[in-house]
Image 1 (spheres, rainbow, N blue to C red):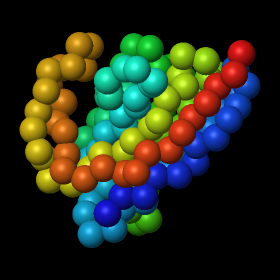
Image 2 (image 1 turned 90 degrees about the vertical axis):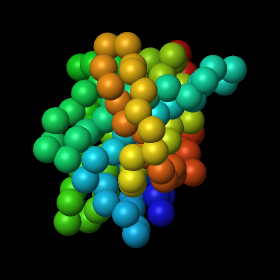
Image 3 (image 1 turned 180 degrees about the vertical axis):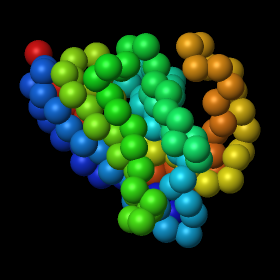
Image 4 (image 1 turned 180 degrees about the horizontal axis):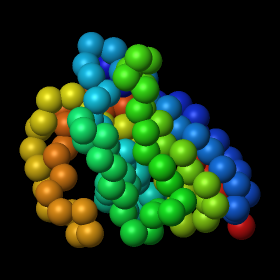
Length: 124
């Protein structure tokens, strides 16, 4: 349903653009999560069906979430990358599965489908 791509290894200060291509479901509203080694998965940014976008404070001003409805693909543009951004990044979309209160973001829906994850490694 969701195919994530675009991860890689970069040096601190570099940039990457992650993509999440959807099939069989809409990418109109979706989340990006990440999971660093030894830590739980956490939301990074989300975009609603109206186009409203939110991101957590740790990536604000550096990461931008967007979507291309025609391509049914979402993106996470990551700039000024830091070693602490190293994680597996997952896209999440589809019917709402549950909602959770996320500090700094408020009520965030979690959707049914998950991409397979794409590794981002930032070296200092």
